[in-house]
Length: 253
Image: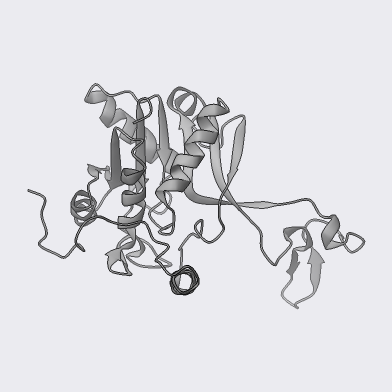
């Protein structure tokens, strides 16, 4: 364990685009199990906490070795902010006499994240004396600089201005944030009330492992990635859960 570090995994029960996305079956375990396992297997954290409004998710979290913190109803809506969820966890920890130096937020809908990613991002965060750090993946096959939008008649316009004279090889490298691994110094997080605080740094990661699952198409893509990477590498790309698969009725007690 490196210092006084806490991992926070926010796993709300409701999702309109992909119902039950945090606990959908994914290669033998609920999706949530992989971010919990990656955080635990990293060996960095004094505690791995799953914040949820759903006791059923809490039971799954505890089965895989995390601590469950029940969040209040006002933090269970679509409009609830991740910052507020993390602040609530810190309040709960403070009531137990725990005040972490830094927090790491890992989203449960990033099931391909690995413990080695978390360790490497901690190394960058800590050695660089960073205050805020966001995991990102490079854009592949598309160039956001060339984004176009259309009106009701399908007439197009350049979203960021006309880039037609800029060749793709002359464009700057661009990255897309992924929810896989966000680090923040607790003091600065509370002061700025943000994960994207000032200044925040980027931590690139393997785009396959940084995939976010938000809808059915994302889930299908993630499944294809796991199958393809397993065939290519001869082993599963998923973090070992080190537990039997959760089933209703399982209990750690």
